[in-house]
Amino acid sequence: MKKENKTYWHRLASETLKVLLEPVGIEVRVEVPVVSAPPVADLILIQRKETLQGGWTEEQRLRLADGLRDLEANQILVEMKITESLNEKTLTWLSVYDTLYLNMAKLERHQLRSVMICSITPRKEFLVRHSFNPAGAAGVYESIPPWGGVVRL
Image (cartoon, rainbow, N blue to C red; front, top):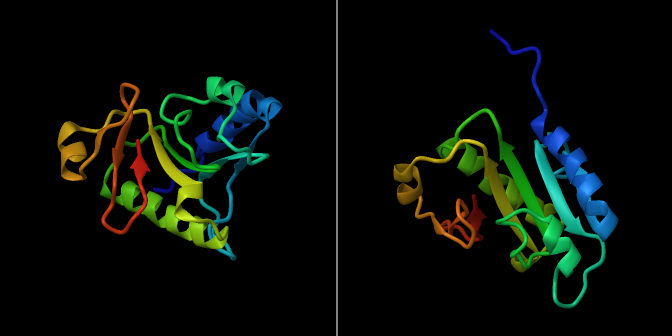
């Protein structure tokens, strides 16, 4: 049976982020293309409008969530999992989106970080199996996939 009334959580979250972040010079876009032709992914892109030496301003860092404010990348690609838990499939897709957007936007690796925001805490076994380690604030984890980049939860 096909679900007819899908809630587009990433759209709701991006509108909230726009209100919060755009006044301090952070651009928020929703459903950003990750390849030159459709499909469009359910992603949020958080990007500094101006690339300044030294990264995010103090005012910007105050408005960014734990796990985001300490990232030095100019652009943060966010996938949200509100109603489903993190699993191998969602982790794989985030890595695919990261790679596709990096190539499509012609960015260097240090310019982009990809983050998965989950409302359901991943199981410890999952974190261990995929080499996630605590990174800063409580509930924030990072893993370095064998193919490169860094995935943050």
